[in-house]
Amino acid sequence: PPPPPPYFIEQAARGSPTSQHGAAQGRASRSVCGTVAVRCEVIGRRRRRGAGEEGVGCWASWWLGQRGGLVLIEDTIECEGRSLLKTFVAASAHRGESVHVFGFEIPEEEFRAGFDPDVTVRLLYQDGFTDPLRWTGEAGGFCGEEFTALGVSGQLARGPAGPATVVLDSLSWLLLRQPLPAVCQALGRIPMAAASAGLRVTRILALLHGDLHPPGLVETLRSLARAVVGVGPAPEGVGSGGDTPRLASMLQRKETGKVLEKEEYFTILAGFTPKALGEPTGSVPRDEDTDPHSMADPAANLTFNLRLSDTERRARDGVPLPFHFSAQKKSSLLEASASAGKIYYEPDAADDLDEEDPDDDLDV
Amino acid sequence: LSNPPSSLSFLEGSLLIVFQGKLTLLRDTKTDGSFLVHHFLSFYLKAGCKVCFVALLQSFSHYNIIAQKLGVSLTAAKERGQLVFLEGLKSCFDVFFGEEQHVGQTNPLQFVSKDGSNLKTMYEFVRTSLMASGSDSWKCPVLLVDDLSVLLSLGVRPVDVLDFIHYCRVAVCSQLKGNIVVLVHSNDDSEDEENELVVNSLCHQSNLILWAEGLATGFCKDVHGQVKLAKAFSLLPMLP
Image 1 (tube, rainbow over the protein chains, first blue to last red):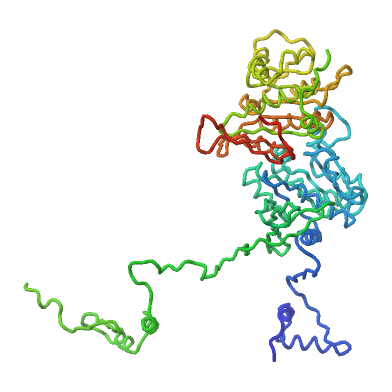
Image 2: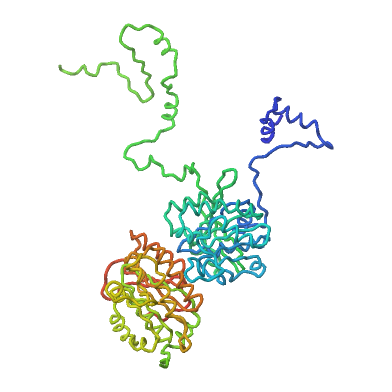
């Protein structure tokens, strides 16, 4: 009989005393309408991508399907990441979520520029740009010190009910002015604080300028995040003339603990929709066992011969292993030997055995 | 006090109308980028803009001599109210050795003697200088700073320098629709982490970066270096 499919094994492992096959048959006896109805759990179901989905847009919707968690967009001086952040904002808004933007780095009109009207309707901007340190005393702004779990959920509560996305532009601004543990705690507690106020925070999108912080801090945030997208410049020749192509390096940490990595070229069209431009060639995901043909032959270019011919290879394979007991060895070991130890020598094809004593011709 | 006629070409004048509310970062590596500061100072004065110049590095006469070679008199500009000149060297001296300040007249460089880091008074000085008063008919206001690395040397923390630039952007770029031009020094393999933090942070915030680099091969008499443009606005014919 064919071996049972893997999920039957899982079913049997849950305590059924009968054999695996028996369990399947036992369940199958309760068939309905002639078909076998079996309850089983499949671990690690892989979602198949639809034929039309592509690239960063598909990834955006894939992540946006995840519950909660921090999504980090990391950029550097060479390539800015705010436009990619805005594509995520547009995607969230198109899904009907309200988007609460805590903006510290650019004025509100600059952030809202370029969005479609149906996106800007769902955008609630907390102005942390105009007076974050209370120097001018302008009312209505969001102060940097207010960035705590309670402060943020208080702002969220003023918005409409329903799923909400929190956007931080940028996290670097906060990290330069507040200690890292406080920021990390606030990020972790925002969903809970919002939930106790009756809101549901689906995800937190944060923009991080990777070159402003020490590497340890960036790594800490990456380990906290559910997904990390690093944005960098793409080499020449990618995409058509009008785009500004960029390279996105995506890392996603799933609930099962599995980590997925992917690299992709993309560009951003009007209305902040991303367009994938294909994957970089030669960027195979890091594999521990590399292709042996790609490694250089270590026995090449030597002054001595390290290679084996076929006869030599066969002779080598025929040599008995040290702890492999042949009849001769066994009998010698079982004998009580009073004399000096015997030497068992098995010459191979290349040996030239000469029984004479080589020191005979010494005139001593 | 009438405005002098703008002595810019039509192209430069139209560039000025389009390029407003922006932060320009002047950056130099292994060379002296102060020629860019002199250029922008004379450019904006000739364009008829109101300029607030925070000059921390050199004295007033130094800038005046060079500006006269470029066709602008700083003394005259100061007299007609077009130029507000904060001479850092003199003000620092006044903070320590000057007479008692009257109430309401805080020295913008007060931070040097007090807690040493809060640049709020300097920001307020900039804001009051560039606020449009009723009789003014200058074009867009401009803040020019030479240079920010000196503030770090004076003991200001990098975050406070960034806060100062942040609030200047709010007041000058966002509210008054003016421009800011700032000079910083940097080095690719610099060990000055505070300076690199300020430089990198400003690179993220600025709309235009002009990077003057010395030649990789070393000093040369005729060619001093190269200037790289990043995030460049489409045309920049105004460089010397």
